Length: 380
Image (tube, rainbow, N blue to C red; front, side, top):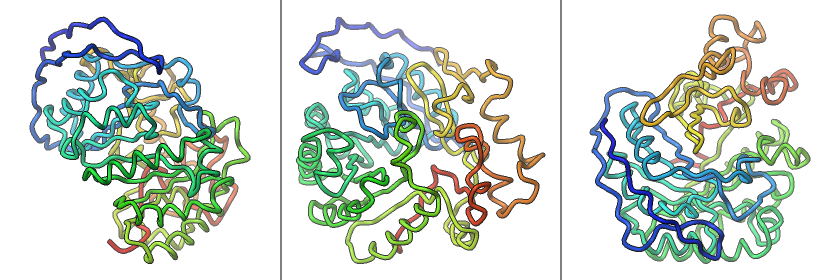
C-alpha cells in the first residue's frame, strides 16, 4: 500500500490534559480492503492510546498507563490496513481509555471504510467518552462495551474511583436510549464477586444486550494486588453459579472459562473451542509502540509476536524465542508429558512464563482453557 503522510495538526489541550484535534480536521479517505480469504487474525485489538484518567486496581496495562503513548493518525491507518490484509475482520478499539485519543472518532469511522465489518469499542464510560459518543451513531459500531466492575457503586468505585459507577451508568443508559448495542463487561475478583451478578438485573433494566464476565488477572497493575485474584477452582465455581442464574434474565451472558475441570472440556469443544489461541492465531493485539501480541498473558513481557514498523509487520527477533515459538514448541515436546486434554498440549506455556507454573500443575483437576475464548452462560 502507498501511504500518504497525514498533516499533523497543532494540538490543543483541554481540561483532561490530553490533546484533541482542532475543529474541521478531516482524515483522508483510506484504501478499502475487501474480504480476505485468509483465516488468521480475524479479531484485531487496536490499542490506540495507553492513556487513561483512571487507575483501576486490576488494570492489565500496568506501567503503560504512566508512559501514556498514543498512535498518530498515520500509524492507525497503516496498522488497520495491514491487519485487514492479514485477515482481520472484527476490530476492537481500546486503550487505556480509547475515547481520550484525539483521533478516536475518526478512527472508528475509518475502520469501516477500510473494510472491517464489525467495529467494537471498550470504554470506562466517563464524561470524555460521553462527549465522543455524542459525535457517533449506533451504525458506527457493532457494539459498545462499558466496563462495570461491580453490581453496585460501592464495589465498582472501590476498584475504579469515587463516582465512576454513577457516571458509567448514565452513559450506558444514554447509549441504550439512542439505540447503540450496549454491553457490559466485568472483571470479577475476590472483592466484587459477591454482587457482580447484580449486573444481570441492571442490564435488563437499562436494555443492555449482553453482560460478559472475565476473571481478574495478576498481570499489569494486578501484580500489586494478588489478593484480589480468584483461584482456578473458585473461578470455575463462579462460572457454574453464573450459569445457574443467567436463564432468569433477558440479557445474554458470556463468560471466559479460562479454567475448566476435565469433564467440562467436551462441552466447550462442542461449542467451538479449538484450544490455545497462540496456536489458532485468531487474535492480534497491537500497542502504540508497535508491539503485536497474540496472548494477553504476555503483555508484560518482551515475548511478542511481531512489531509494526510503518506499514510493515516485522517478526520479533529481539529475544531467543518469540511468541510464535512459545506456543508451537510444545506441539513437538509437551510440557508435562501426559496431557489431560487434547486442547492443552501439556499446560499453558504463557502461564508458565508469567506465573512460574501452569495452573494444571497446582490443581490436577484443572485444565487451562485459553483465557481469550468465551462461552455462553445460557442457551442462545
